[in-house]
Length: 158
Image (cartoon, rainbow, N blue to C red; front, side, top):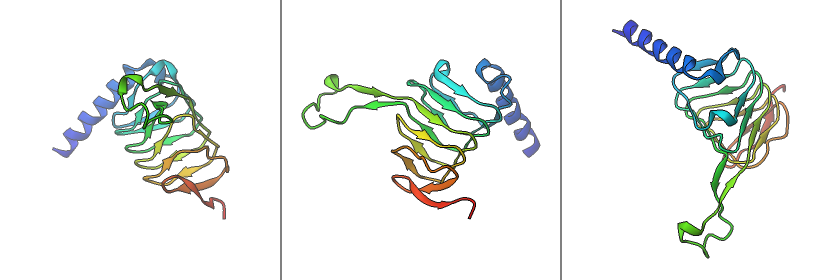
């Protein structure tokens, strides 16, 4: 029974891969079924790993570098409601959407359930700890970030 389930899951992953031409030729590792909102604005490097239940909105554009790992349940957003004048414009018809691209550098690992908000740039070689929310650019290359909002915790090489 377990073997049949593994075979069925592999068939689902292969079907997903072959039905999304923007993944072809990139050596992408698909583990489960990710959701990619706007494939035309989604650009990825080589050897990227996309895991189950990750959601990449990509309305404003998402660029993933080489050797990036997007773990289980990661959410990458590129648009959202403008909250500047929220108390004055509670009527949803008058609220504006903000759209901003997200760029993730080479070798970044977004651990499980990380949320990346619109307009974020993540420098190469960063690990973002599980459950973190990235609200500002992460610019310390080779560091571990974590928390809500994500803050530098320690360099990875020490």
